[in-house]
Image (tube, rainbow, N blue to C red; front, top):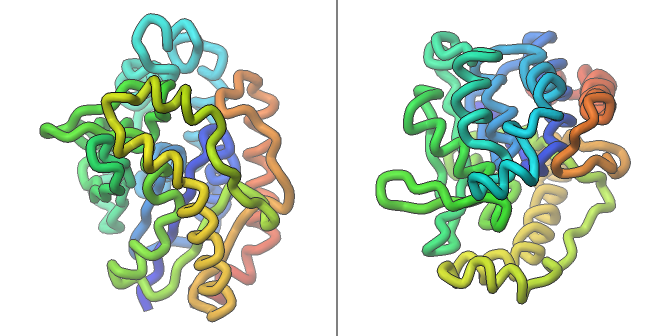
Length: 281
């Protein structure tokens, strides 16, 4: 059976996913295909480039750098996470992305974005890891209000989690019969409706379909959670998630907090390692 991995987003909750993936790579666990949403894509890409420790390393190194993530960056550029720093300086200069390994790895890696004009999910297979792929990575991880829409080939994108937060169905439709789902919320989590929809509507008034997608996101998300539980009960899906809330800020600037959440991911995966190997085999 072909096996896929689905990586949820969640901003700096993604350090949990980074810890999970590093333990997988250290133990030689691979997949036939992968899909990442937002932080699940921009941190999960290291699974395809096989760079153990890269995500936690550069996040700890640059988390206090205003060019990486700050209100000052938002004021100056319209993007809370600085696009030049995040998608040019770090991956190609400061902590280089292994493009050769990424491209040589036959595992498809899909990133999920939300088309701001339709409010629908868009899925792109990112084969190169640079050029236009970096725009898609950026679009997948661009949070509404805190980011400008990313334009690629005439389409504009924001955070993929708005339209499809946990794309298990997408992977199943692609033919992956067994899937590992990495969640960044605990088992009892239930998403509540977005607060301040008036503010969101005002900021995104040019994109009414996007506003509607944000307004119904909690319904979509909770339905996806219920579906994942059914698939897990059927035995075709393996879920990895923290036992309790990670309690980390979306824009965490404390390297010790990033390390704490990363370590939770590592411990969680280490505890499930034998069970995961049995599932994959």
